[in-house]
Length: 537
Image (cartoon, rainbow, N blue to C red; front, side, top):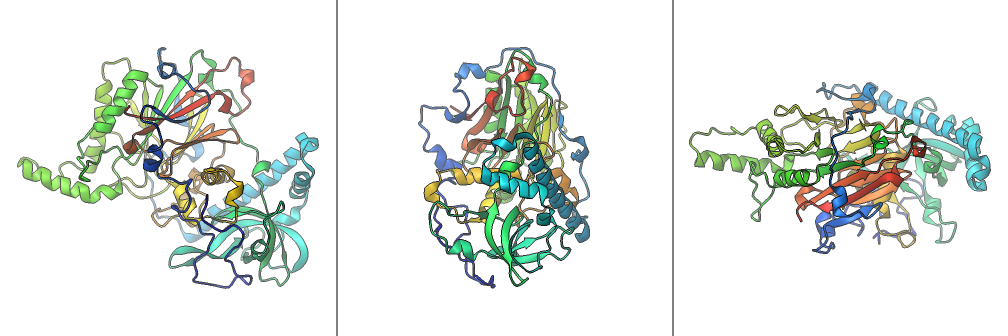
């Protein structure tokens, strides 16, 4: 149950500035469905290894790989927008940043219009009358993408744009909500929204729900009586009109006779003892991962950062001083951050040397990595110890033998939960649906980070904004988060939060082979089994 009152909204009718806190501003700790993973794990029976699963409930032996390694490649799905090396950051000018954001908005609107037209062409008779009218309006009427925000009108009109909150003390203040227009519609187009009609509505079958966050692209119906603000009557849920853009070709790895096995483990990978101390040479979790690989021999292992978290700086300084006192041959900070990182990876590889473990190891960096530049998107890590270990950027959509897999270590779900406001009645929704809704934002915007402006702790590099966009819909999307572990099927994409290795959680995925290429229709959800399990059991 969510703690906010769904029958009222603390937005003044005249959209006046206020210092009061919005009743609809949802904090991370407000909802019971946003349990931190350590609390969530307490609900799992001691004798069970599986925390949760989706698909078929498989026997543990079915996760063991017995076949010879197949020939498959791992690379970026879209080489044109991939980040393969370090780049000059904080280099984009304000004009360039605005231009990149505007291009994304205009392309998204055009794609929505084209998608509505395709629905009309393909299955007009199978769409309900209310949706069909909206689709026709969006497909045929250009007014909704060309109407100036400040033109007076008493007739309900469609408007499209990006949600903005008023900024106060460098933070978004949801007391005043604006709609920002694409520059092609109105170069100075930003106008306050009047949501008073939602404030006064009663809870009945026609109860209009909405959820907003800064950066969200919306289509709405409203009137502009004065030319100074839009009186909103309805937000159009256009997610159902956007078709997923899955890869067209059937994945090669699913045309073989054996299933394909993937494991995802999210850092940090250092163990904290009972005294809240950290030994930076401790390999407890890497040893546990190595033991899992020896037993199950998966095809691919994803290690998602941070490997050494920024918050561990004071612990590292304390640990370095203690090492210096115990060993006179050491000099201060001999174990620099690069050496500590490579030490962990080298240990994992050494544990597997000479064994029949054929797992490919893939690293995804984090902007919270201690000693690395806090920038997003982030370039791949430099791995000096093993050629068999490869690294990709954060975020990435990878082509793994034809399977499109998206991954990010940036906690977009937590950031969205801090900024989202809504009037959704919690009594009409199941527990956990808010986290699912946050995942839907990422997929529906086709953007790994739709929040604008970004979280205060994140340095978004607008010159690389294209690297955040999903030009194709991933079959599997891994969103690493401090929120509780989950598995969702959202419009054919399997969305996973594996939990944290430090909380004894990893995710494992089996993709079942197809009997024929004709079975492939885009989504792989019916051929995918996922489990989130205890690493040490």
